[in-house]
Length: 425
Image (tube, rainbow, N blue to C red):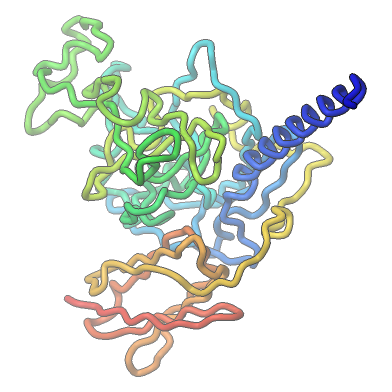
């Protein structure tokens, strides 16, 4: 006989189970903002002998604090025509563990850092610091006006030495891999993840893999640059330069108009969707490139953030937050509770043959903490690279070597492999 007391107990157990599942799911979705960083655990250095990537990740129940130098673990430079030199920024960025959609007035992405890549390098928006005749209209598109100074990883330093990218960070992940969902390659300052160029075709995680596309389109009927994208008609004193071969469409960010539904992404250059890291769904930004890996406007994050932006990350002198007492330090991989699996060194390398750089990308299931050594055919050691990690792209600089055959040795504590690289003229 089932009594009312028994029924109440069953209800209590049922709701307790639902609560437990909800807590577990929320906890699981909190993990990526803690675990998605390329943490330097060995003291490895990058440009000018500066500690590379992220040094420490701390967290409490509300926020995650990422300490980084703004110097990546891969080779950077040179920067043609750019006199600035990268320097240690000693940043401590703060990310919300439970980001919230901004339902009020949206926050514009300003100049300077608007987010941070997984290796601690700053994300900048689509503009440089200049507008046509300093009018405050017709803001220069950094990709067109500064692109000649970008290095092979599409980054460059600003006046204070802050190394950054305005566009797809091609050395952070394999942007040629169109068959897998891209990894998390950074976070915007509203706490939402930034993915590479490829996601699930459908927002519910079905339909295979598809390159994400921008919904910003060039205003092809514009001739005189006399109106803004929102339809505002300007006085002649505020006109931009007429569209011409000297100032083609795309030179200025106001040359683009958001057209809802024309691409897979919204006005923020993101969407709410299921991802491998967020199986319950999350808002996520995606970098945008075309089928030839050429950056596509607005490149990373649109003109406004989707979520509520954390204080202390943006504006003059920002990026130097102080973690409160009681934060925990994330030490990979033991704090994740993920069981260790047997791995090997899995990677792709391209182009090969190469005239200058070959780029190596490690599979997400590859062995980690890889030491790479480059030898010529006579067995002479040419270069050593320390602490290469999974889901990160690295540049192998062959520019200084003559044409011929070279051998890249990849080694971990358990595995060893040799990759042949051909240098051509």
